Length: 144
Ligand code: T46
Image (cartoon, rainbow, N blue to C red; front, side, top):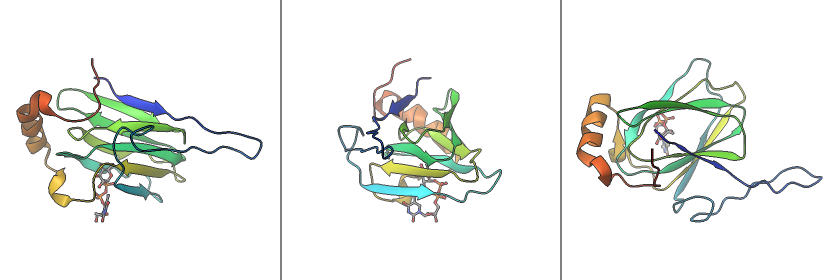
């Protein structure tokens, strides 16, 4: 299973670093929403769901965490530990976020507004959904 991790271009000078992200340029979709999580407790696992159509880029802008992605057939764990790296998460990926460092701030750029009806929270339902969708799943093209 292939995953897409972006390395963004930091604009560094003697004052420090700055990363700028523009929709449809650095980010492969129009950004409709930004949210972030912090103060995540030790041992906490977040996520545990997939989406019907939401695409996202996850950036751990401070500290570190791990993301587990599962396409229904294979699973992969991707560490996020650099503020200039972004992990693309397509809709039909079961995702879990875990192993947060105490100082971790995980920021998410999302292609849609918040919509509870877009969530698939039951794993068996997710497996049925990916089976039905097959190659129709939308998002960034990745080949094995
Ligand atoms: C995802 C992963 C990576 C809102 O009111 N608006 C929002 O935009 C979001 C994202 C959440 N909420 C509320 C809903 C819940 O009462 O915030 C609370 C926590 O949300 P949730 O339990 O869904 O958080 P995570 O960390 O399990 O999942 C989130 C996103 O919801 C999800 O889309 O892909 O991060």
